[in-house]
Image (tube, rainbow, N blue to C red):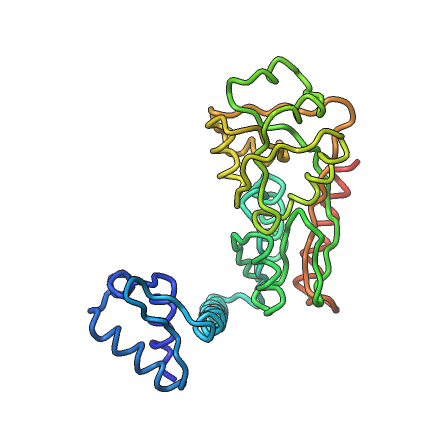
Length: 298
C-alpha cells in the first residue's frame, strides 16, 4: 500500500473536512477525495460515514486511524535513527515528559546525560501521562516521567523523587493574606484540577491529599494541562494545586504560589518503562536519575 494514502487518510480523519485536509496537505480537494475512495476500495471497508451535514469516522475508520498513527510514528523513528547513525550516534533513548514536569531538575538531568554519553542521541517528547502509557506499550518510547504510578499491561513505575505540593492562587485572592496556607482554608474555595486521564497524571495524588483534609471538594473545572490550569486560576475561576518548582519556571504575573501550612504533602514523580531488562543506555540514564535524587536528599 502506498504510504502516501495513509498520510492523506490521517489528515482527513483528523480534520473531518475535505477542504481543510486538502489545504493542510497542499493538494487539491478532488484528488484527495479520489484517494480516500481508492483506500476504502483497497481495504474493502468503509472508513468514513459521509452524512449530509458532516463527515464522521466509522468504527473501522477509528481503528485504522490509530494504526496509521502508529505506523507513521514508527517510520519517523526509522528516519531519525538513520540520520542519527549517519551523524555518528551509536544508540538513542526516547524520553517522554509532560508539560508540568518541565522543570530545572529535568534540564539538569538531560544536560548531564549529554555530557556523560555524547554518542547517545536523546530524543525528548512532550506527552501527557495517558499517551506515554500507549507509546511505551507500543515500543515507541523508552522512558517516561509522570506523577502517577497507575500503570499495567507490562509497564512498571519506579518512584524517583518527591516535591512538596503548593497552592496556586489568582494574583488577587484572600488566601494571599497567609504566608503558609492552611489546607482546610484553601478547600473553602472552588478548585480547578487536572483531569484524571490527562496531564502529568497528578490528579490521583492530589485528590487523595485533598479528600483526606475533610471538606467536600468543589471542583469547578477539570483541565488537560498545567498551562490551562494556570490560565483558569489566573482568570479567577478557582484555585489550584501543583508543585511550586513546576509553576515558577513559567513566570506568570496573573498567579501567586503559596506553600501549605504545616508539613506539606509530597507528590512523587515516577519513571515509567516497560518490564524486563533495560538496555545499556537506559541503565546508564536511570543510574543518573538515582544519583541525582540521592544528591538532592543529602
